[in-house]
Length: 249
Image (cartoon, rainbow, N blue to C red; front, side):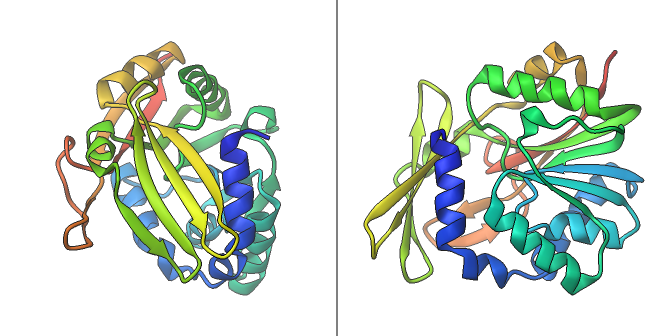
């Protein structure tokens, strides 16, 4: 199990009760924004890193046929409970992205707040997979962490509930944000590392997978002095941005 897998399995198991309390309302704004940027609700969609499944459920309840992937058993189980709670019909699959071989193509493949796991080669491999999963006119919607923001955020700390502390760092060599969660009661730490890319680097990487960038949308930013989140920011200040990609070949 790699470091990021240990992070997700460890934090999601420890915070199972917290994740179980999330509701559809926690995700509707994010889904609204994605649909607005895409211009329409996609007919068939594949979500990568679906977590507790609420974004997929929200999209399904709006009329899309959705398949949702996550490798972690804890959140997969919570997603099934949420499915029953909201009466949706999402196809939830517990699987690794790189092992997934669907029998159909999709109008949309989307990845919210999680792109960047592993090396540059891993990102390229995933983008190539996405290319194979898309219909000829299909599109991908991917949120990517922006390095300038995370470089400045290094050293920031915050509490997560009553038993976790979170600390950010930035790895200059790998151009990656390093996110460390420490459980106060056990003193056990879990670390995830996500590579960050500026839009031009992502465009170059995508082109190697025969994908082209159709649009770039900056997301918001956090002011750590006031602990206030701003939903709008320019591309050099945003925490992350969304790319819309389509097939070039």
